[in-house]
Image 1 (cartoon, helix red, strand yellow):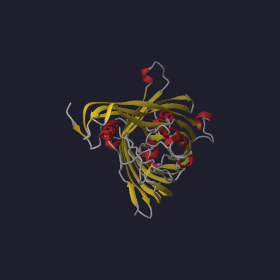
Image 2: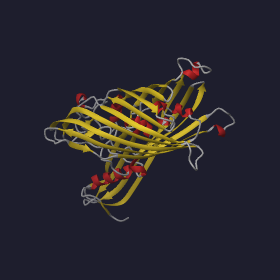
Image 3: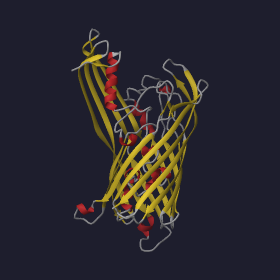
Image 4: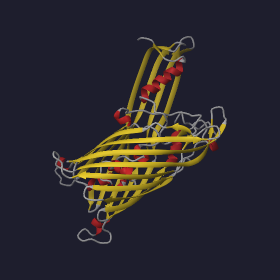
Length: 446
């Protein structure tokens, strides 16, 4: 095998090769989120700041409320794009409004739902749906970034390469539906064995990389109170709907094991290097939502409980974010949060629908001094606007075509932190930022 020049530091270079092989490519910052919780999956979710996502009958229901797949019996194919521009800042006496991150998040999404009852001898409808999103407009399936930082790093925002949900739903009783879906993330492992000299030239390399799926469940139920209690004639409950959903904790992870023998320096069995880290963490989430539908309009909202305290246990097995060497008072601490969302929708006419929403999200990061990792995270206010256009008659297609556009602005409120560099020097900074999210989708029914 030919010699491969790497860097001037043999063992360190081998670890870098393993990390690059496992990750695919490096984003500019760490990420503890996914597009479903950070921005919104489809344009309608972005436009309402996810306030009506529990009652969105598009394929994004597989993530927010799979039970709602039953609301439209027609099949559906949806293509979407999402582009998020971000400017995340940390300002202090020694800085001039330093921009810590400004790389965009760019997703291409595809989703489909259909009725599977034709596959069985039963007439009872069973609905199936899936949605997949890939970063950099489909070019980046697997990537991660996990690092210590002297200048500070934002906890939530970053590239989120793979978003995949598969689910199904059915009607239980009149007006009562139930659904279940699976959120799929990847657990990547890389193993490298090699011989190296002091110049960093390797030989007899052996590298293996694997990525296995990790499946976490999403459960939900929705109730149309009017159809349940007064299906024959209207009553005061008509128009009211309620939904409850549970999303299990999930995360993407990467493990790298490297064994290096360096000529005249490190003899057999060599130097063992091991790194295990998590990325794109989603906390355990409980959501309850309600909406009221009138004649050509609806208004609704939801409240989410996000159990971020579970992230502290995850970090105990993370060799990069491990805080066990610090005193209990200096370790990162997270707290559970409640996120309220409120939105509405109004049909301008038979073809155009306007929607808007607002949300307030508290930061789950409790500590403002996190040595080595130096995480930054703030409370934020999200405001969304959007428009849908439905074309009822097309020359080629049998069913109407729907086009959705959504925009969302997220204002990260100012919050003070203490940055600690690797030498123990401290710096007081104020973190804030602005996020602009643009999303569009086209839906074909069949």
